[in-house]
Length: 319
Length: 306
Image (tube, rainbow over all chains, first blue to last red; front, side):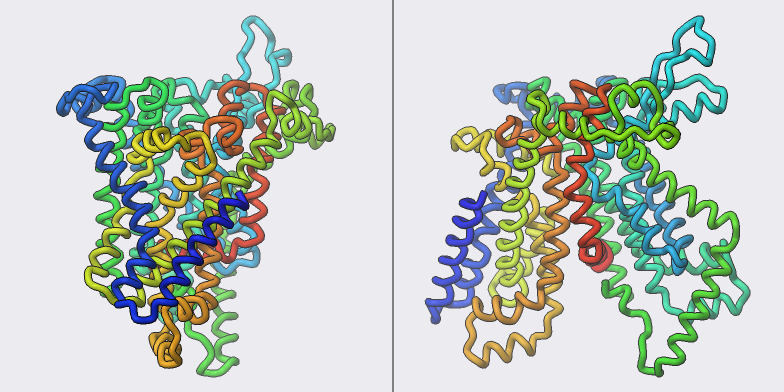
């Protein structure tokens, strides 16, 4: 590792030294030296592979024969893949909305209270945890112990997952939360919401604090308080931030596969496009299908980003 | 960050500002003292904390206890052991210590390299005029939308044909490339905010681009570099996809890959899973708690400022 860093530093140093030495270089040459590593890496690692993947999505599983749009047709018509697309749609709608909503409500509730900093850290903390770690944390919450038949309640094996213990305390049957579709997808979605709400809260909290004092005071003089203040002053004032948060979370959600893979392996009808891409590419060895799914992911991200950029532009014009 | 600092400050004299803040505090108290509001805040805080807390306690309980009863019974019967951590770290079938080192080896260059390259590029985009600058910048910025998934298989194929597959080089290179568009974009925004007069003054003194970059830009950029650095650090440390694809062997695989494997093969052995998860959590958590300020700053610069 140290060798790599050292080598890297030496190369960079040489480039810089050359640029500095040659005093009379035209500015485009200096720019070229500064940009060369970036352009080379991006062409090698992003542009060319993306083009190659788009090409591969029109070929069969071994990348040998041209099959036209077959992979895409399959992705949109076969039952198995339709479930994947449906799940992805549910994820990308539910996660951003719920996470943003919870983040917003929490940001408003703890704003300017004595415990603000501590309370925010608690909700923000999951952001630092890997999705794999988060999945394990939640798998433990959902952990299920089978109910033995013809055994009285007091001799049943203890539930060690919190959710099932709560059910038992309430006098209900413990559930296999992760095995029965379609609800199991929602239990996975909970994990993503748990991770993302902190992000929403942090950004929105900053936006709330930036609302000019006079607006808040004027509204208060008009007799606005509590929920109506939230509805008529807070939410409209932070609208641009809300859009950014929702779209950013949506983008992240589209690409997520760690949670699904760690919690259910994509079984029991819980797979999403990003996970199915991995399964097709590296488990089923179906290159064409994997590529097609990656391209679908790509296409799904574009409108969200475009919308995000447009909103940002508009917000800047207003400012 | 700029969003926060726009709050009206000083000028009108200290007294008035204090009274206004106080008034706001009183108003806030009035709002939060509504029992439903405080109740909702507490419910959210608890829901966000309990799952991690439960697993943390589990990781310190003896195996027999974990299987026999829920972690909440630990308060009545507090048995503590470090055996789980010992097994996971040093056990030959788990060998977490090896993967821990792998994660560190992967992460450091994968943070340093993209930042330095991005700094150069961002400087060129911000302060060196050349033809097609705007277009090229937009092109780099736009590449943020390429999902990593789209690039994985062609990259893997290239690595194999170059004979460097299964080494750290592939992981470093991939992480660096994937980080570049966002890094350039953020650093460029920060550099643009540096007053042109500073750069002009240095130029009059006869400084070339390299000197300007190091003596004028760099010191002012430290906060921005810190926030992106933390971002990239957490991102690389927590990554699963790149690690799985390019480093899927014991020599190169990071902790996340190992934990995920464990979840697949030994999904019910909670004494291993809980302690394993916490070993993977500890570094990012410490970094996060220590440098939270910078992390938040980066977050706000990246999303609100755009």
